[in-house]
Amino acid sequence: MLYSLTGKLVCTDYDSAVVDCGGVAYCCKTTYTTLKKISGESRVCLYTHLSVREDGIDLYGFADREELKCFRLLISVSGVGPKAALAILSEMDPQRFALCAATDDVKSLTMVKGIGAKTAQRIILELKDKLVGETLSVRGSSPVPPPAEGSAAAEAITALQVLGYSSAEAAAAVSSLDPSLSVEELIKKALIALARF
Image 1 (cartoon, rainbow, N blue to C red):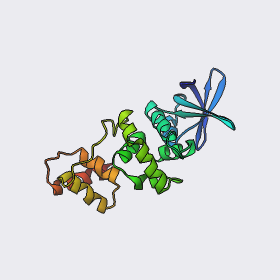
Image 2: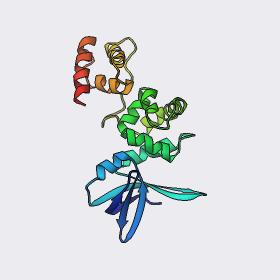
Image 3: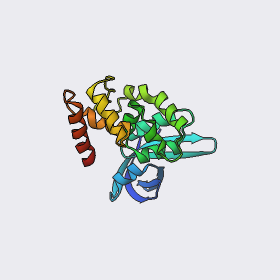
Image 4: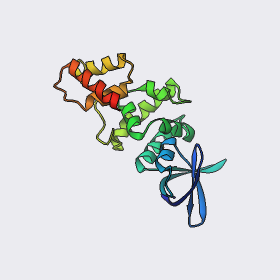
């Protein structure tokens, strides 16, 4: 089992990176997120997943273990293959994906090319509990629990969604604020945070 590749970055394509390890160059299929992280680097380390099927062998590489873990969780969902998993992780980092699952944000997932509403719902249904179990964090902390119904935080999140933000974005912005604030203050401070982000 290949755990990781460390070596010279030979070249990159729109969906892959080639790493030379001791004279052998390995082509890893990867995400736009990883390609962005390794861009301009001469030596790189990619954490890998080797897929062996009847019709071929594919190697997938990721800039960090969190993205690899998220990729493996995604391909464990029935009907989600490596191509769809790469597409999702090219659009959002593991923290944002975990937040989508924690907040049942189907809308953000369906914005990924090739992911329909049914697939997005299946992903959330199958991975919501696993994401907590695998300790995938939201913005570097523990997953955000949904606010109590009828609370100021819940009202603020609803108001931000009316303004066009996804439930994941709204929940992330509100969860970092003092829950004792009024609805108006939560909305105002969340809007400032979202504008900065």
